[in-house]
Length: 116
Image (cartoon, rainbow, N blue to C red; front, side, top):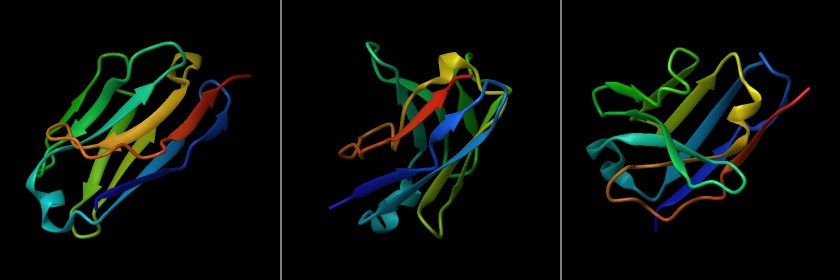
């Protein structure tokens, strides 16, 4: 059974930085067969795609985070990271990792709160 474990969230002031990590266990070689992504869900809003990285390293970012966030992956360790810079209050959300299609069961996510 595939499990996703996100970590690295916390409380940070506007303009600050955080690095989120995601460990994927139980996926075996299927981790290397497709893109991975970070999503977020703010209170009262739908879950949205934040960033995506292909197996070859090609990236996509939502307009709201372009130029501030960077997604990366390590295929040997089945891990994905999201480096977040110049954080804004609007970035406050629970952040999740998953593959876009077909998605695995969602993990617990990691809370990111941007507030002064």
